[in-house]
Image 1 (cartoon, helix red, strand yellow):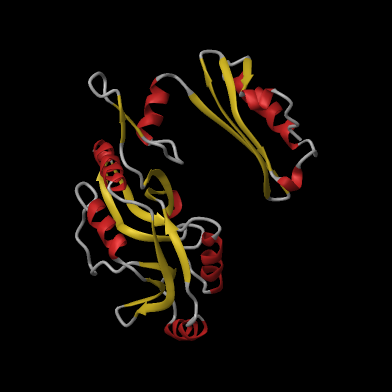
Image 2 (cartoon, rainbow, N blue to C red):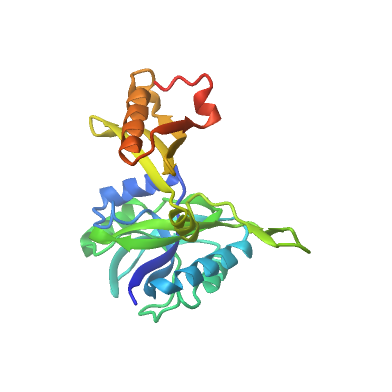
Length: 278
């Protein structure tokens, strides 16, 4: 049975993630671009593909028992001499450790080389001299961050880690008790199990991204099924409004949909009524 390499983390939310990545860039962090700014709860673990649903259930269960919490990141510290890293310490560790205990269970549990210490890595495999200089320069750095959800990440080609599922820190919502119980969850990412259901139904997701001089200037998302394509969202960056980017995106979407046998294209109501697509 094939295995997937997974991890569980608290992703630093925007705009603070950009600030943390700026520090990582200045410190020469080799993982920048491969791993988002994060606080690891479960380090990389190999999980059989047929146990992915169990891993998702663990994530949801842990999240429903947790409420949003705020911690302070900083000042920086290091794991030298055992490990040449530079990281931000985490204050008020109780909520982090409690959440970690909830997610560190089968099939996500694994043997550990080092004890769990909550932290946000700034640089891995850094030279000791650079670490000492950064400890001094960033001695007063502290920032508060509120976490409201937990993410399951998967390692892909090029050792790039990307979130594949998220679970919000909210109580479980179940409707239809006494009849057909229905559990409702609100996520920022499409649940992998839900994505599998969509694929089984013959629905194909379709996304077209526009770039101008290397920068993303717009994106259109939708789906194709049974000869019909639907545009669910279209976003054009502020700097590229009224420059024709939206029209190009819609034209490309229609062309790609037609190539997939979907000649009819519908638009979400907010797009079809009075929208200047730029």
